[in-house]
Amino acid sequence: MLQIRELDEIQKRLLREVADLHNIPEGAYNIRANGQSAGRQSSANIDIVPKEGGSGLDIYVKPGTKNESVHIPVVMTQSGLTELVYNDFHIGEGADVFIVAGCGIDNCGNANSEHDGIHRFYVGKNAKVKYVEKHYGSGDGTGKRILNPGTEVYMEENSTAEMEMVQIKGVDSTERTTKAELAAGAKLVVRERLMTHGNQYATSKYVVNLNGEGASADVVSRSVARDESFQLFDAKIAGNAACSGHTECDSIIMDKGRILAVPSLEANNVDAALVHEAAIGKIAGDQIIKLMTLGLTEAEAEEQIINGFLK
Image (cartoon, rainbow, N blue to C red; front, side, top):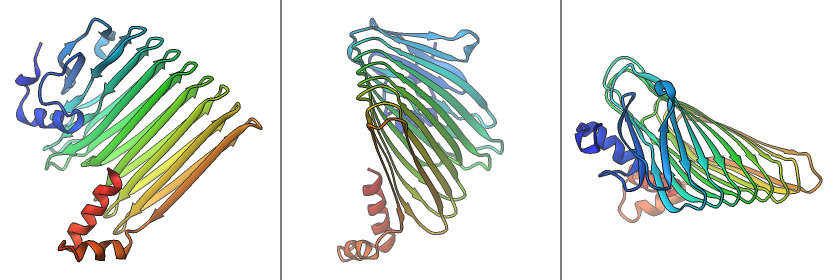
């Protein structure tokens, strides 16, 4: 089985972009390159098992596992390749684990390249998960770079899931769907960061059901739409018990970009406390002027503001 050092330089660059990997990671990992596994390792407490037919993985984290990580990045450099992968994470009771995913596509050809990844999380009682998913596109071909991530989170009592979703550059089309079901005392935190440019298209749809007493969710998206790109943020939080929920979309619009924010709340219990916020606007002129007085050009000032906003 291949190791990271045997990947080509473009694939290594993609791994650095989406998973911050410069060498073989410690702990459990599976690296997928052009539809095939390019390296896999389980650990004493984390078992990575391929699904029959090669359609994805089952990742089992033993109960009580602490301070361990799982890396499952995907890189694609073959133009015209399309794949659909299902990865299921089974997080044992009381475990505390860090999971790094993400996909990078470098398309220098004329055919579209597409990766659709469905990640399902089964988070046991009192378990904690931190999940980071980054998407990145590059290449000078006319073929598109398409990423459609689907996430499902099923959280048992008093579990915690913190999810960071990042897409900053180079992805032509993405449709993100996220569904979460929270039992009593469960806590979900989502932080999405997104930038589109050119004619790119990106949708993010969230449906979060707070089913148990004391469950809570905080779903926040920060985004920038440049050139003629389009973004849709559609987030629904349903309070089905005495719970608390918050969703927020904070966006910068530039050039001829378009953004549609659709925050939605559904209270099905008198003690459900739900809040939504949405703000879309351009960069304030006084912010640019202030930075220009420090010696930056207008373009450099805009980049500084955007980088700080998406940090």
